[in-house]
Every structure is written in C-alpha cells, then in structure tokens.
Amino acid sequence: MFDPNLKNRLAEAVEALQLDLTDKTQALLLEYLAQMQRWNRTYNLTAIRDPGQMLVQHIVDSLAVIRPMQQALDFRSEAVIVDVGSGAGLPGVVIALACPGWQVHCVDAVEKKMAFVRQMAGVLGLPNLTARHERIESIQPLGADIVVSRAFASLVDFATLAGAHVRPGGHLLAMKGRHPEEEIDALHKQGNWKVQSVQQLQVPLLEAQRCLVWIEAC
Image (cartoon, rainbow, N blue to C red; front, side, top):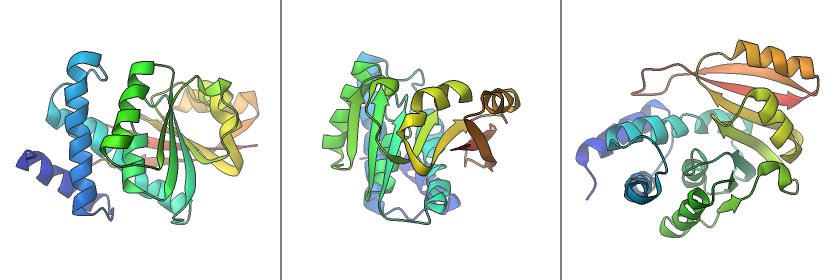
C-alpha cells in the first residue's frame, strides 16, 4: 500500500495542474517513486532521499511540463519526445506514463540510470518508453516533436548537442528555475536557435521558481 499522504498530495497536484490522469496512472507514478527509493539505496540515482521531497521535486515537477507540452502539440495523441540527460527518467518516465500514445526516448550517458529506466519500462508496463545509454550527440537523429531537458546543460550546449534530434517545426524545451537571461543572450549570439517564449510555471507544493524555455531553429 502507498502512503495515503503521498497519494493525496499527488492527487491534489494532478488536479491543480489540470491533468486527466486515471487512478491507475497515479498509482503507477507512486510505484515509480517507490522503485526510485529502492534503487537509490544501491545506485544513488538522486541526491534526494525523503519520499515527500522526491514526490514534489521529481514527480510533480515533471508533471508540470505535461500540459504545456500537450498544448504545444495541439493535444495530439501521438508524438515523439526525447528526454536528454534523463537521469532516473525525469521527466521522461513521467511523460510516458501520462501520455501513453507518445513515444518517449530517455537518453543518458550513465549506464546505471538507463538500466533503471529500462527496468521501469517493464515494471510499469510502458511499451512507449525507450532507454538509451548513449551520448545524445552520437545518436542518429530521432525526429522528435519536442526534445526536453531538465537541468541538463546551458541553453547553448543543449541546442548544440541535442538540436539535431528536433524535426522541422519541432522544439527544444528547457526546464529551468529562474529566467535564464544570460543563457538566452548567449544562445541568440550563436545564431542557430532562438527562444520562442519563456513560460512561467506554478508547480504545486514547490516553493521555487520554475520556467519553460521554448526554443526553435532560426
């Protein structure tokens, strides 16, 4: 059984984020959290240990990107998403759970983290989730509608390393804390990519600034 407090907090966050997630999907998100805790004891997937903090800073923080992505894709049921520097599958595993019609590729250079994501694809029953233990710049272009990163790199490095995987008309999407003014200036000086918009996020239960930086090719 899941901690009722965690279950209730997740349900409140899902409602606040205006997400249509079934009870089964929410239970799978809690199972993912439990698996992350279990693996963390041996493999050090994340520095956060407290399950309540993990729920907010990992699960809810990742859920906050779902509706903006759905809106950007006009609520299409099918899409290709690439999560760069995915770590323990954040936000890729959460996206795959919330949007089962989307094909989600989690990419990370750390093998143990991709082994965990690969295990989660089986445990959580996610045929739409792929774990790739590779460097993003060494992979053949994946033709993604959205390439997303969560604290992966500067905007310039993100665009330089992962930009080849964005299909024509697609987007890079950087999940950031404060508005990254200097990084945006550096990206625009490079000249290949431009920031389309910076979207402020209100993440339920999280007392920290969050924003989404939407980037497109010039």
